[in-house]
Length: 365
Image (cartoon, rainbow, N blue to C red; front, side, top):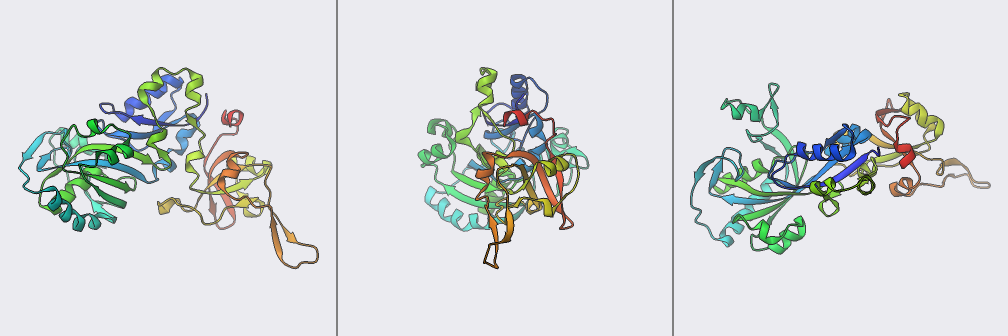
């Protein structure tokens, strides 16, 4: 079975686990997992890992997420979205222009690193239990704040349905089924709860607020335009499905790269340390991954077509390197992905997550 990542465009009324079950039946193997859970009523990008790609979910999940969310004011529910039990419903006496003016001063406060309290109906663990377990049993528990990062937060008028449709790929009539007071375009870190963000923005307005619409338009390099629906997978034969599977490393290309030769690549995959002197190429500081804990991780590739030579030109005392790999894309076309590694003690490359030597990916990629 071909290992890799499938970019699923999840619909409403299905859980992320439902999507995994559909893919699992389609590919005929158990080793299937998803990145970044989407709530049942949320739609959009849900990358699903197949086979050995499940090892690398943590690297995919750490990247930036992009959402378009609808906001309904004057309503309070237990789930912080419009589908929960209604606790409050008050009339909002504010024109669209007045609301836009107020939000222009409030939205910038939520850009950058912020603290938020996750919803009580969420999968966050407290004392070893999911918060939704406490909520379903009406048990009180103190929910700790968490630090998250919002990179972009943009107000969208409810009258601008064409723009919303262009972002989400959803017909304006479907977007407008609930009369939203406004929409938000959000780029944020893993672990950010859009429902909590909307609640807190509403609080700054002096109003209750719930999420009434949510589409994840991007997860790292996975875009909604490139996704396929979970339902369509049910009707695909295995050949069609293979065409939808991205190579394991293609969507973690934001990492810097290291190139090894044949001997050192086998040492790396067998769990050994590779001397920095044996590395054929090490990419510079080009990582765009925002999560600081991954800045020391490298995408490790084997190729015998690119080598870096150091030495002196005849009649020239200066050092030279020849040839250099210009970018990650050059390596993708010829390289074989070995895994993710980290440099330790400033002397060695050590594997963090490694593709097994006898992996089927070698025959396919």
